[in-house]
Image (cartoon, rainbow, N blue to C red):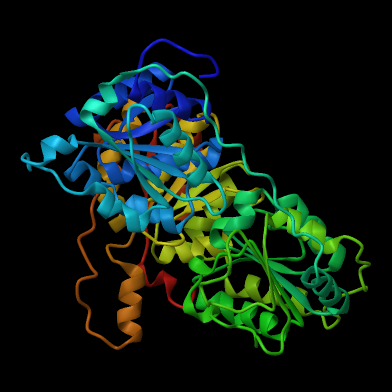
Length: 543
């Protein structure tokens, strides 16, 4: 759209702008109200992928985003279609995912007297998006550009665009390109606060750092690694930021967020720290045990984030609102490292304690399934994981050597995400091995999308932890000495489900069987469902 063109449909202008932003796929389920939008996307070069449910479609769009970097696109028709997407839109809001949510709607005049399936989409989506916009014909380019800017700048998130039927088809002549200038990488300006932060860094002998979602979005891995190595700063990452720095690094203490077992080894180190640096740390991923871990009156805390700290999970002495990598680089500028940190060997002890707390040598069970997959699957494998006990365990022991190598729902912790996340990632990179780890309950929520995987010819590996229980909730019931209720269900033949939808299906009950199934899946021409049957209580004492 750099030159004036002849008349175009408003939907074509929207689609052309999304293509310009790097979008190459859209996901959803069409209704009559979005047919023009779907047609416009296809004409612009954005492939529309038919999913079987809008919630799964949104997660496919997120999986795509984590691989190709472009905003995801979810398309839903009015009423029930839009409402089916509410969960994944809320998830994108809490997980900071740039998702463009396009819904069809009836024209305003029509809505005055026509009420079938009509409801106020913008009222529904406003609380769970960064913005809810309505497309107009003359302003289609502006609305599209605003949506992309809002979705991607600062702390990313979803933006909703409601598209009236007649507006989508209305012909307009775009007379000029109207684009917002891309945001700059913001570094903190010289100030008394920055000088004080540098003084804290010079004085620190026991510094510790948390890396989170903002650091991942900012691509701050190289800057964070240089900072940690220069000043001897051990670090943890939130679950979604795992792999920002290779987890084999001796200063890395792995992921943190939901595991009380891991917290026993991590929280004491942060309580003993004489400087805490929250680098792009978004506490939305953390359990309440991470609330005010350190004494805010006694421990210097530097908070670097995309937005001011208003969450009150912790307090900071100095708040820097800036790009994470640029801020760490500015903080280190002109500062001479004081020498060795943590002279008591606390960092090595914490690493050793974590390794002992999460052993991987079990003959069988949840940990053995994860360990065997890590051994067999190649290092470049992209993994996704559903919510549940297996997610907590896997997030602690699954090795990540690069950013976005493990995808999950961290802020909202929604079930049923692993399978569609993996599918979206696989569509974006067909040659890369992709494995999804699902609990059996979460898998049942989205099993119909196996038909989509077959239609697309995906070779994704779907590992299902079959224990016939909501294992995490059942464990919490027992811990509270409550009677078993509403957490157990029948054991189903998940391997047969995989075969019924046109893929491979294998049931495994030991390491050898799992190893053989994984090797066959890597060589297969279609997707594979591996049903790993385990005891629900194999998580006891492990998370």
